[in-house]
Image 1: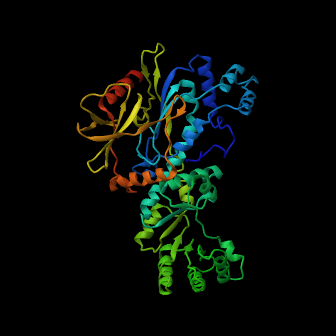
Image 2: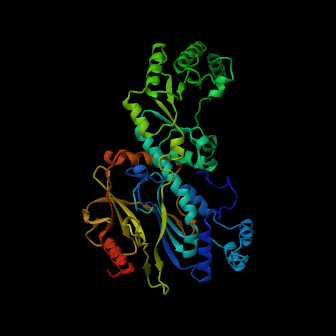
Image 3: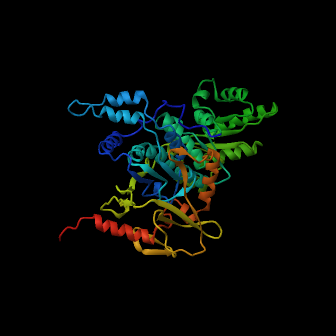
Length: 496
């Protein structure tokens, strides 16, 4: 059974987890009688984070939980009732607040499964339903999906640098952006590839294995370092990892060895030592030599201290003898790119006479920021070996031609015909129908396993950290043609 990630942890109602303009637009739709007009929105990002070649989709379980519990409580309505406009009048009509009291979520939601590798401009979530509802949920979906996708992607990159044999521990709670940021980050980091977390609440709520050592203060609380290690070994005779750099790292290793001998004489083994400062490549090599010479070949060397994928790659190249990596600040804060930049754009609006769709588009001076109209699906084509080859976005409301061609939306001269026998899968899957959850979402462990499979299925040129190859993502040809025509129709003509 998947525990609800949000319910029971925060207030009974989280409906005010939104920007004010979502509520003011909702009020405007209601006032104009547009609240029930059917609309389609897509949530997506424009560029993969960290100048990389992909992202790992995450946060859907949080979003599904939030949507399942969407309602406005009496406390919510009391607060909204007290909001005033610039002239002191109530911001919202009392009848609108009564409407919100009775509001039931009835949208259809399709989403890409957590742990799936995704690329720029692909809808991670598609929402179809009454305009007011579809608009109202924008902010919450973005904050829940953006951050976890960002951290899961960072974790996948760190895992790539570490490799599959070493352990990866997430140690970032104390540096996270608040306890909610820490909890979400621990979940996303595990999904993206971490083996365990130091965050005990994340362990309790999500079933993530918890690991930890001790702080420098433990050593400083005793007369000397060896006494501190002896005391810790007495408390945890089979689960001790000693932090050895409080005073002098290599002397600390020697003290750890002395205590490890005492433990072995009593039928126990030292689990590891931790390095948290200094030249980690040099110190780990020296520590490994000391441990091996003393007969402790199985004692693990844990390293921490602002580690991230580039530094880990460098340490590996320098021959570091680290086999457990504690990743903290750089991971949970997504230090080198603190936001994903995901957006939520309307793509279709039901005609007033219910005769079909008006497709909508957001224009920009930059083509990359021009949205894609339609009720979109993402189709992923695979090679005979199951490796992703290209992704095609198409409009599900329009028939597909017999012969398919994928067109790069930024360069129409870049075209890729699709073989008739090409194998594929549709990425967006039903999650809600008429506001009811219709999919049993995978467990976090299952999503983590998916992420590892999906990342490893990518060509190494897409996974590399520096100047990765661009994975082909394009529009089905008739959709690309329609989008171009719509751009020309909507863009004003200015005389030269």
